[in-house]
Length: 235
Image: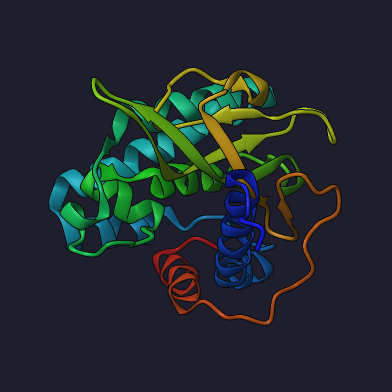
């Protein structure tokens, strides 16, 4: 009997994980092609105030003002400003402590209202902001990675999400991250191991040139996120 090598085991594990998660995520992206091209900020301000009081309303006001003052900049400047805005404004907090759940995907309003969120919340809020600023979906991908974390005792990996911006189609992306505030080319982020990436139309597995075909699986919590965003005023 031949014992699989560590690399073979890892590839097998990642393949299973990729398609499990890809199936769970696909519906959101397939349904969200028109997501975040316009926003009803008056509705969002009212909802934020009801939920989070005046600080919540003010957070949405600041977001609206930020988008207004950023709208005429170059795409590169928009990307930089959006990254700085959320990295400075939102405190990183794990879902278990913030929502009492192991995995909760917050809308941008919820993230701003609480001024806290985890990696997915950062990435999604940045994605929505750039779509509202007119950046085409084909230049943006939410990227699921394994992040290597080093502490005083050992190195470990954890699931993580970043936003990838592609200045030129087919070239390497720039990475917008909640762990590292500096926007760097993907090749400079040796601590990140990409698993798959996606935009509103397609999904790619790391190491493959062609997009993954549509999965028949359905993800109720992603559909719920889309529904909540729509109800909050993002369309």
